[in-house]
Length: 466
Image (tube, rainbow, N blue to C red; front, side, top):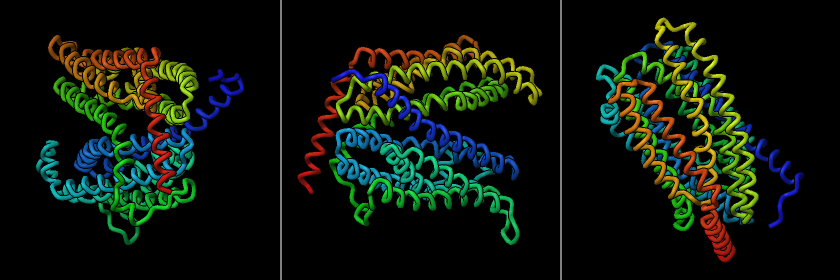
């Protein structure tokens, strides 16, 4: 394969930017709408905040399950498109839609049928059950639609329509606010429904955007969904999706379980430590948006390059993206360390909080670099079909460094929240270095060639079927 010319490299860089900035805007919109929903719940009551927050925790768990399909669909669609198999990519998109629909319906039935049991498992106070149960039943229906939307958004981005996806996310969030606010607070003849208004707003916005996504799929992707797609899940495309999606989702679920264990550790350290943990995670979410957006763009492009057999170009892209992400993470972490403790001190009546936050953000200067490596390179490996190794090593390191070491340093040896964060740092840096070594030594290339052969085989099967 010939080395790309400087002009070709410049074109790839512009492509990465054009794919990544709409994803960055999407992430910012989701963060904004989550904050706005929490504010509206806070205007109702503290109980409404607790119910809203608990529902978000449950939705996060199911979101990881739904991404089994969305991540798998995204990768195999990009590989098929890279191999020049437009019809195969459309067939995979249909299979992703069908699978996510049934997965969402199963989740909705579970949450809608036994909300009390689920809320008890999450230790919701008994006095909040009367408010939480009807809220969860409405959210259950919204979750079924959300499962489909997550996959449809992922496929839109896999077809490189990231700007269209961004507009749909913007429409969904605007609809959420326009429907929720009057229902929460009451406007004119509409009664104030309190926290239930947020549930109905979420359901209405997800349903309307699902309809728009069906239209967008037909318009931009040439995928016109049929009644058969509602009931039939083709076996071979499903196998291709799950081959990528199951290990990737297992990795994320394992991380979430370990993370929740460390949140419980932080809670045992007192109110100040738990508050700082919440502040630090929120700050990290903002700092990491550039890295996450670039990583998503790299995953999309890498999938296309792997499908086309252009592995050297994928390596060039990864090297360029590494420089971008490490600089973005370093600058963001440094600014957060310099500015955020002083900002928190302005409205915190506990002097321990900003001081503790400063020490946590100092640790983040190195942890952020490890996280940037981990997020970016893991996405590239996933796009190349190298998922089992990253999933296994991630779970092992999550348990040993992110949980056991965090407990030893934070609880057993008494270093408190900084000790827990040193465990986080070890976890992120170890995982980042492991995947970086795997990428640099090209141990992913045999699996990438296998992924390309599978994409070409699917193309032949699609051609024979037509």
